[in-house]
Image (cartoon, rainbow, N blue to C red):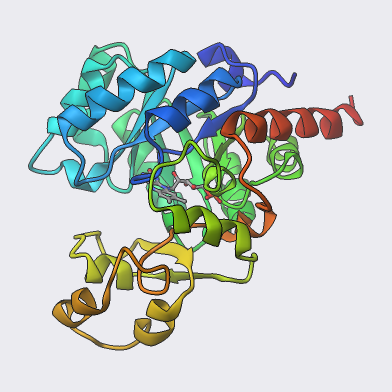
Length: 308
Ligand SMILES: Cc1cc2nc3c(=O)[nH]c(=O)nc-3n(C[C@H](O)[C@H](O)[C@H](O)COP(=O)(O)O)c2cc1C
């Protein structure tokens, strides 16, 4: 199997991180990714509690080493989720979307490496100054909240500009994608969307069905779901979701939060959110997460061995 900084640093077999997906990546998914030879990360959303982190970490641990992903901006003013994450002694913590300078030392003091997803070259300079151990170039194709630069241009730019280990995220859903970013110089990939139809994910049943049915042209980059759910995301990060009746009605319309909240219905696939990236077009069935990770690793290995 391909050996990179990522596999050596964390003692894993496959250079894949399972993305920390708020609302979708709980302990069962994370444990399955890690048991398969990758490294899964719990996605702690702003609305999760310290107890949630402890409960899901206990489930994840069954699969081996695991990580925890937090949204940096959501820690400003309340670090209880960070404290809860550190207490679980994960193999790594990701601090993404914001300047992690105020938190890196605390995580390092517990002997835990910090990795940040970044969306621009300016973000790279911010997280380098904060002292993170590695970065993940997260492209606009990614599911969930992300930036506006595509994975490939961003990855090339970041690889040219830092001595830190660099991973790629956004649009990597098969061994071809993993092989491509490793061939470009990345130490591995973080994958989210490719896992979203797996039975180990949490969330409504319709979310898995929508992911299987949707094609790569069916996503939209939007903030309407944040506004409908009063999620105080900083304006620069929109979220990539599967387009539905809600987005075709409200995206680009200047409606107030109250109107959007009334129209939003999480129990209805037409008016609830399913965050997913352009790699959704590569997901054709509800396969166990371990099978997805092993398949991506084996296919990438085979493709890369053509040149060895
Ligand atoms: C449903 C969903 C929820 C997400 N939630 C988070 C999150 O809470 N924290 C985070 O750092 N990234 C989050 N992300 C982004 C992922 O960490 C990652 O960048 C992305 O899934 C990679 O692109 P891909 O979806 O094309 O594989 C989320 C992604 C998805 C699809």
